[in-house]
Amino acid sequence: MKSFFNFMFASCLGCLISSILVIFVFIGIFSSISITDSKETVTIENNSILYINFDNPIYDREVEDLETFSTNMLSDEIIKPIGLTEFISVIKKAKTDENIKAIFIQMSMLQAKGWATVEEIRQILQDFKTSGKKIYAYSDMFVTQDAYYLATIADKIFLNPAGNITLTGIGAEVMYYKDLFDKLDIDVELIRPRNNSYKSAGETYITNKMSAENREQIKSYISDIWNYVSQNIVKERNLQSIDSFNAKVSRLEYFIPKQALDNGLVDELSFKIDVEQKIIDEVKKQFSINSPSAKVNFVKYNKYRKTIPPVFTKQKDNIAVIYAYGDVNQGKGTSLSIGSETLMRVIEKATKDNSIKAIVLRVNSPGGDAIASELITNEVIKAKKVKPVIVSMGDVAASAGYEMSSNASLIVASPITITGSIGVFGIMPNISRSLKNNIGLTFDTVKTNDNAVFSLTTPQSLQAKQMLQQNVENFYDNFITKVAQGRKLEKTFVDSIARGRVWSAIDAKEIGLVDEFGGLDKAISIAAQKAGIENYGLVAYPKQKDILTQLLETLSDDSDLQELVKKEDVFKQFSKKLQKLSENQGIQARIPYIINY
Image (tube, rainbow, N blue to C red; front, side):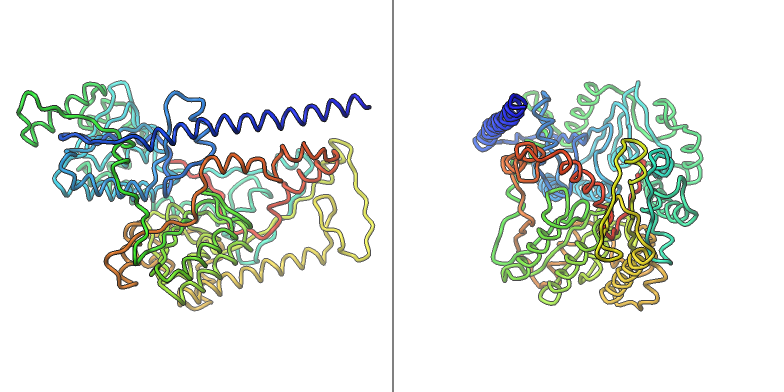
């Protein structure tokens, strides 16, 4: 036994030392990267073409996340996510920069999280073209439809002769767990308000197919998105008609390069190296670059990005841009998740800062924890009493994402933002049968009161179920009350359009859930107008943690490594895993769909 403990201690110590060494290696690499970047001076030569590779991840702002960082550690090519906020500034500068003569975009697939982000990128590129400069697009193969949709903003589209275009229309795929849970002897009960038949997130645990209401709402909003996208494709490519286009999409007639060319979806079939020379020749012709010594250069986006002054610079008057990105949870958040504590604090800080004249809340979230949503919404209500709060909806601002938006001074969304889903649900999993039948674990209880034990392994009484039902009813009533107050609508009307239903922003604007169409840039302009300021700086919240901080936080008290070092007994560790499984027992406000595009 003594040797066993010695072995365990040595193993734990070894894990700890190894982890610390890895951290220091990362620190060294990170520091060298930072030093290299800080010393680099970038000069953009005349007659340059801005080259943008859209195969990198795209977020609402530039982020440093551990996943991307770890990928870069194992890759020969450094991947830098594109931030929409910074991208807008880059293209605005390129529009007026005499050294930039054109833009060349290349992609096979887009790593955006939804259609609205693509539309915002498309809009700023459309504005670039008003300068008279051209945009060229190339792909070896358009793997995703949103990649091709973005390419249609170009003056000329090139496709690899051996490539293809994926145009199939939009589909939604929902995963269901009921049959799996039946096999594993796991019991799940769904608790939702009695009229929330459209609130289908919890249905994935109790059935194996879509309900009629869920099928109806998904069909409605993906149809709105596809109609918007396909109409823009037909317009930009000067195609015959929307009906003809959709008929050919259904028959997959655009997939083969020759068919895509013959049908007008691309302008030329050519290889990239030849495309680059063709673009150089066209730029020389357009700008009369006739000198034999004059060169036309390609400058990569990441390099040109370094010439842009800091996007977020505080001045006398400022607008705070607060990013609410990802799932909504209680506690602290990250760059890619929303934590109620973090967001509450930054909203409060922006509200109290007299130099900040307005707040833009950028919401890109499918929802999450209802308690967290309530806390954040309350801070938005308080902030609006002091200064304008403009919401800019991203790809999705639904459920909890909509609640925190509902009490803003104004809501701006892309027509193809997914929103609404005003409703809540809870689930009660019980894994006692699974543990007994599969691994031989059983549980017994001692109670002072009838409902003293609430756990994953004890069936709940009828009283408990009735209480939980009343709880979700109260949450829903509070939800529609807040929406009615924030949107200045009758509560009965809000109830009629709520019930968990998801809407496209096209429909949401018609029923009063959205005020104006536009992107983040428009929301900032509206905020300045509401605040009565013309010259202003931008301040971003929450402040981002650098990679070093994120790495060090992996050794926090909640990490698996710390659990191992503490040498907790097996049952306690097992209980913690069960507790993690029960996280969704709380009241939830979210949508879970996987939209294929």
